[in-house]
Image (cartoon, rainbow, N blue to C red; front, side, top):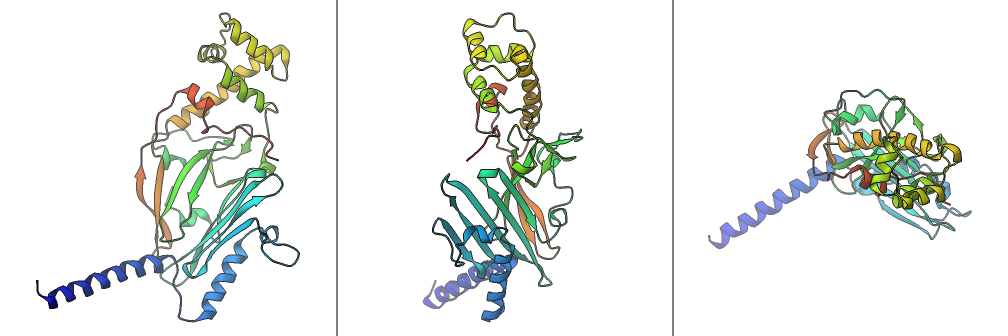
Length: 313
């Protein structure tokens, strides 16, 4: 290859890379070449942050415990930090996606650990921007009966700073928070919406950590005649509220948890990647990953997968 051919090849590579980068960025957000458009987008993104007043002092300045990633030129804004004195993590992220007509679709996520808040929202109805029939059966294709009066899962989304792909996962709503819903999978919940069915969740958690697998299975099966002395001692130490029916109450909780475990165990896709289609102004399914590890019921009870509702501060 002569010098002239090498130069042509280099120019071609640069052009291809430039086209790929510009397409990736323009799918999320594009600008006219003037500061006014950039400033307007910056204001638009900040206006979507739900709790701006929580992040600023009386003079309107950002508090020192807050970190801001303001990449408005790429249609991205993230505000995060920890509130003193408890150090409760908070985070709000918003990204703008542009369609072929020049209209913006925003995707926003807000989390606050102290009140167990998780909220996914948009300037449009989420059902209108997600793939058709996107829901719990997308992650559990074998699920036939979706009837429920209580939500068990919420959608966790990673909003990108660069590009347009978003990773979605289903996670369990903390046990002890009874969120009334006709959908097993929801997009938002918080402590204010809870209906805690058990006030002694700390005891319940300790019982599952200390009891033997055999004891848990025997209590679940309502066959407690052969409980070991050590397990009986543990049950006595961590009696639930109604002491006369403590074991019965524990069995009731185990039955509920077993149903949740069965649903969780049937999740076929660990994560699903969505990408933005600027022509349809909707996300579409780009990739499905089915690498979820199988765990036993006893492992499930003691794992970080199963969160228990408790006061955070």
